Image (cartoon, rainbow, N blue to C red; front, side, top):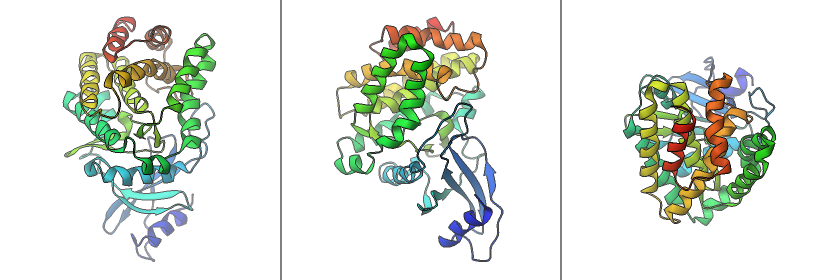
Amino acid sequence: MSTEAILNVLRAAMLITPDATPEPRALTGGVSSDIWQVDTANGPVCIKRALARLKTEKTWHAPVERNASEADWIRTVAAIVPNAVPRILAEDRDAGMFVMEFFEPTKYPVWKEELRDGRVSVDIAAAVGTVLGTIHAATAGDEDVRTRFATDDIFHPIRIEPYLLRTAEAHPDLDKQLKALADTTFSTKRVLIHGDVSPKNILIGPNGPIFLDAECAWYGDPAFDLAFCLNHLLLKCIWTPAATDQFLESYSALATAYFDCVTWEPPQQLEKRTAALLPGLLLARIDGASPVEYITDDTNRNRVRRPARHALLNPPKTLADLRHLFREEADL
């Protein structure tokens, strides 16, 4: 997209004057969108535009309408936990872009970078679980939210297909298990989910975690959000092994804080569904369309494949059971 097109969005929203020509600076880190920082007279802002073809090695297409879904998710969540999302400053749905507040990295570090460097806080993990559970609880059974986020045509190609169905292609002997998880997840519609609750999409602010990148927002299965986030805490044990104990403690703290918020269905039922899905997501981050970039050698990939395959063939009933299995089978 041209610089002029970006500046026109800012001019239309009166975030810059008609004659202002600040230079947009492309930000890195994501695969699904183009993101720019633009310095205005009132401070920097962030502009985001969804891509039709994601920046991944394996071909991955997704509807660009998810940009509007993300803006809607942010506005919905702002009414529930205001400090947990950025402010939307402007939106141009025709151009497929929105403008939001910019967070200074030195004051709002990315959770993923903290975990990478071994700075692991159990309290932060618990706070993430509480915010996620609060959002789910506030939107459970809400027919208006369900209607506004009936985004099946976005969620399936950007989550179900690349994570579960592509992984089934790589592991044909697990085809039945992975397709069953896909069917269960896609047919369960209970709360508003974020769809990409990853440490790379969470900033650690002075007032708690801030959730970004809700392009996959969908009224669906809360187990997906919980499993997606817990998955990353397990994978970080391979990336930063010195902090394994803290990662596993954070895994438990996040789950405990989350389940303290669960009122819309029996917690044991949701936990069982989450524990069944998580191994599929573990395997997906090794052999699906979007493998994690920090587990690249076969030895470490197999350390993830072993517990994931074991759990897919013998589904654990609890998240604690899965944590123990992962530690044992991954040789942590």
